[in-house]
Length: 137
Ligand SMILES: [Zn+2]
Image 1: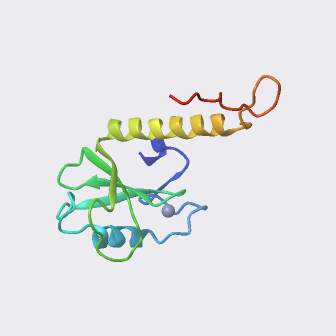
Image 2 (image 1 turned 180 degrees about the horizontal axis):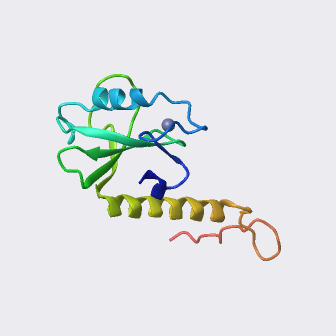
Image 3 (image 1 turned 45 degrees about the vertical axis):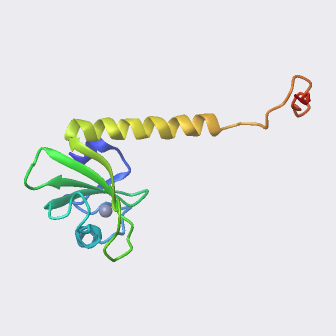
């Protein structure tokens, strides 16, 4: 199932990925440590099913509602968090998670494209464009 998410996710229910050196047991432990009494998921039984290799996102399944999934961003503070942390990046049925992932991928590739080969803004003569002088009003 996690294969649908893309290459940057490591399925913790499968054999250890070669490019992952994380202790998968530590994921669930850290999650339960960080979720504090004011957090929306406090008291919610979450099963970590995958984690992102490129950052600290974990994908969880709700034990009480098996059709519901959530992506949370762990802080790895090793203590009870406060406020909105750990952040809930996505929450819903599987198709919502996939849609979220696709949106993230699109945003990332869009940023990579627009960031590539960008030059300082230049005027038609190749000189840096100057702002038109303003008249005092
Ligand atoms: Zn892993």
